Length: 432
Image 1 (spheres, one colour):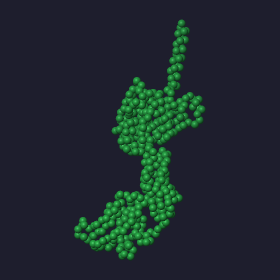
Image 2: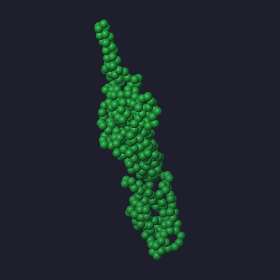
Image 3: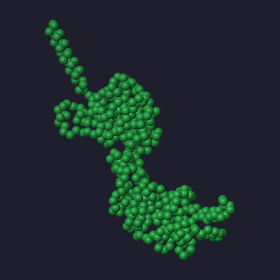
Image 4: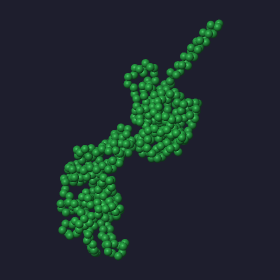
């Protein structure tokens, strides 16, 4: 009798130990591509997938809801929004307690995921959604790894350490994985670049060991080019042009290369500031189409073409300076303003790029944009005074390669400096 009892107890003990120890190897069905398996299967795999994104780190210690603030700041700084810190995010991040997982509920039925929604709202409310798009999804381990492969870190919400404590929620950023070690690389307010085994990650989901994790994905929108203009688009060699354009929905810093199409070395620089200050001189006649190539901080590339530039044979430019005569043989001499001042104020220049005479005696005046990113304009006024009353004809032709900006004004005026009525000395004709 005693032997029978001992035998039964032994069998029950063996069965209990088998079930108890075996439960750690039982994982709810999840598409993990064989990441979790026995040592033999791991040893037979030769090439392991591994990728780690370089995400800036914030600890957010001492900040209310610091883990959510830190997660948001890490995502935003990854896309080079360096002004977004945990302190900036703190007013947006609210305390959130999810419903208990008993009785079971569907994660997809939840209306909010706490800080994940708050970060999403922050991006929208501050107009960052012009460049960034956000979405909250329930992702599996495989899907999180796919986002990392695409270059996008993922913010997740899970339990911190105790799945039964709903006050123990925690937000972390998953920005890397190592299939050989079967682990994610994570950062959160409490640590940087720490490993977390896939099985540990699963155990902290709202449904422990179920491969469903609420995740915030922030991605840059499709690279968008403004119209790329080269101005002026027509002229005679040597013909100086300025590039005007910008790029948005790009992860800064981004590199630029401009091929002006005439066989000269490619212009290289960084960012939209470079694009607003690119100048080029065409030395030969022909028709050319500049092309802009970019590559952003995620390795995404794009290109766009500018308007065609037509360069004709070089013309003879004769400098026109103060004291020169125009029209030729008329005896009328002129001063050329070369200062910063009124009207405007404007930058007035007597450069040959701004004013010159041609071979047939016509006077040319032109607005130019210089390397200091400022426009130079022209004013000439006669040295003769006391013209008196009469009829005065101005004969001019406007030559433009495109639409004239609404702020450009051509002013033709008479001015009587000796008239006693201060406010009745000038008659203007202004064209814009």
